[in-house]
Length: 437
Ligand code: UGA
Image 1: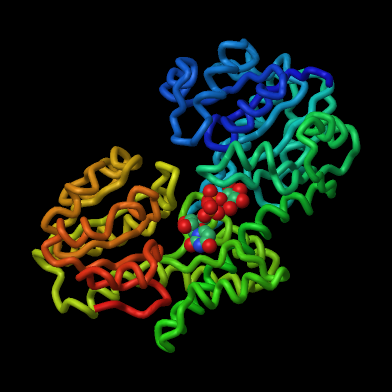
Image 2: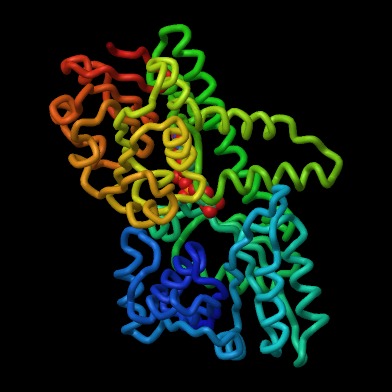
């Protein structure tokens, strides 16, 4: 295997996981970022994000000398033969994608790169962006340069990022010339994974299409759950019955209070915009987004129907992150829920085993935040379960019953079996299943 000199621009989720993984494969990797605080943490072997296994690999590869960090773009770029673009591509107000960080990175490459380089777009970018990046670098290059651009979208899930990198279902390599594609194929060869080779634009679209399809699956099962509630059917049985058809598949059929995170909401909106700009109204995706927004307020609506007033009630909000095993609060359904409860005059105490510090910063001052589930449940009139952390699912129902003043649970993640809950004096409302009184 040829040892490569790799630069990674952007040390967010995708950049950092890519960096440690490539260093682990034996390459020399240098990462550059504009956030000096983050770089200081990383240089000291501390991961700025909570991701199982990441810090261990970070420390190992820093020690081996294969991984390093800098704030100086020139230092990172000038000797690299492969440069990954892994900067953020946030949403603008209208749902379109903000490419300013990406174009800044392209500018830095044009100032410092030379000879033959492979530029890899890892960031999720609208179709056609990789071509724009290539043309921009070539046009503004200070030194003679030959740019091969490759789209290599990332499919990793937060909380399972390393597992998803080393054991991915597929690696997509999109390029309009073979030179860059061949170099990347060789780079990933030791992983022995299924490689899908496409043109540049198709690779860019695969990322949006995959996320939009997964979001569609979730909104679909949530709609079936809403029907189940009205029919007294059980969503878990329905999902099991559907999922065992291999054409449908068992995954992403878990009903709940909607998808969140930094990817599905952003990418579904972006794909709508992309279609709209091409004079095509993506009606199915519009409905998927609409259903998700509605689903996010479902628990609140249920509580409002059950209790005429939430004012002065002590409410335990269990789980803040958008899903378990991450401290990421972006687009988490917990945030609008907390705001609505406060607006209604409830006294809210939020619990999260990991995201409590980020929660303290983001939630209104009226919300108390704790990392102790007992403390949150003590004397609570009702509890909302937003995130299916193990510590919430494994917390004994006997203690929910004992600690709460009035044990009423609104469970947005179906954490407990109905047969189990019915053994306790707990009122229990979940998603797509009958309530227990
Ligand atoms: C998602 C994709 O799964 C990754 O493949 C992709 O690389 C990533 O976005 C990205 O674009 O970077 P992630 O946002 O980490 O990954 O989270 P998921 O595990 O996919 O969950 C997303 C949301 O869907 C969560 O809020 C989760 O609670 C919800 N969900 C998921 C459900 O409500 N039901 C399900 O059955 C599955």
